[in-house]
Length: 201
Image (tube, rainbow, N blue to C red):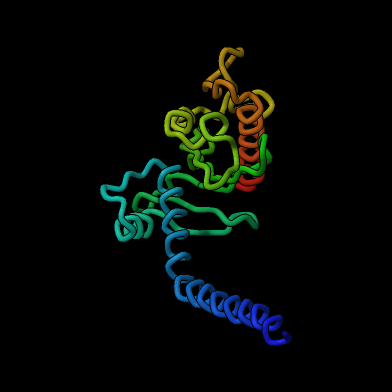
């Protein structure tokens, strides 16, 4: 009786330990691959916000393009990505993010070296509803932000949804709260970045 009672418990402990060891081994053995893939995705994002085209999307091409044009630097205590064409600085990319309808949205924005133009934006993580707020990751939405002028903003309102006066981008239909949240944190983060860095020049 004691044996029959103890056997299932011992069996479950052994099975649990066995699969835990397998998962630990897989996690350890793939850690470098996961880190490399994450680094590649980040590099793609930074190249995208600077509108630097990559002829091929495989990791080697991404790494070569990133090494050619991008450097990581600290400016006024903030870690940023700097894009160069030869010796000439194209612009700066920095983190943007905030809270949307269902959670935190994180991404990057790039501005020109004279802080007069928004070169591009991209999002690296969000939990918005697919087909609604999740459309912030679609190219049609992100491409609207390329080349927007940052010189005529009213109190830091660089992004204004149409049909409001001065509107320059389209919001996502059916995702008003997500669209509003995104414009708010983009405006705030761009304003703070330009304010801190333009004054220091």
